[in-house]
Length: 315
Image (cartoon, rainbow, N blue to C red):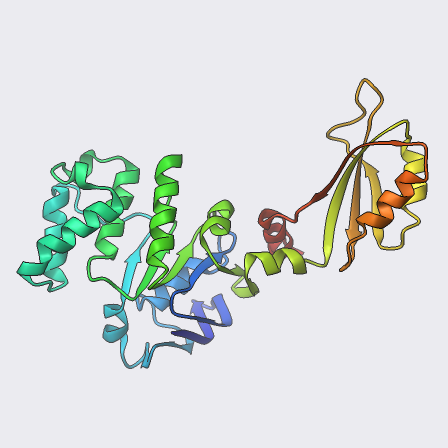
């Protein structure tokens, strides 16, 4: 549905986005990640027609951004991080105003506002001035604004910023429901939100794409590395390092300095491995052949946070 080809943007000689290319299918929920200055906001602004690319092409359905910017904008709903609201207006009056701008017919307008009130959970504040709302409710009103014309594509920049935990879960559920029939692009710094909401992730770093995959594929393909945490009794670090270190694909065997040794003498070990195969049977065999007592044996899943840091760390 959305095709981005060699998209590039310069600001006075500075390259903010450097020849990135990706595609987004209809019904897909895409998470756009990256550290500050990676080019996320610039990319979103080009996708929504707010900025013109220095080079490259954006195609939405059969439209190109150069020739059909208005047609593309009519397909989009965009919620920036700070929703551009008129604080002196009542919520209901504001949504009515937005509906008029979107040229929604009078007989459908009230029905649409009611639908969005239920969907975004703002019915109870409809007759309050926007200035009196919490930041979370302001974001909800902004989401209703972005969805007023029932867009095929929804672009959300930090959609859960300022929301309490219950509201965050509610907004995530809304996004998942919308994503069944629409294309959604979410730019966020909250990695747990990406894992809970997005089916696919594009990570930007220094204007380039550092990764483009599902979260599960990212975990499995992150250098093929993972860790195993082991707690042993009647063991010392040197003998454990000697025995387990003989397994070729174990990179390091170190004492977990955050846990240290328990008062009862238990030893906490952290093994780092690089292998496409499961080495737990080999490790267990080594432990079984020794006089050690196994108290804990746990494989540590590679978190999205660790992968994110690995892909975006500076050289």
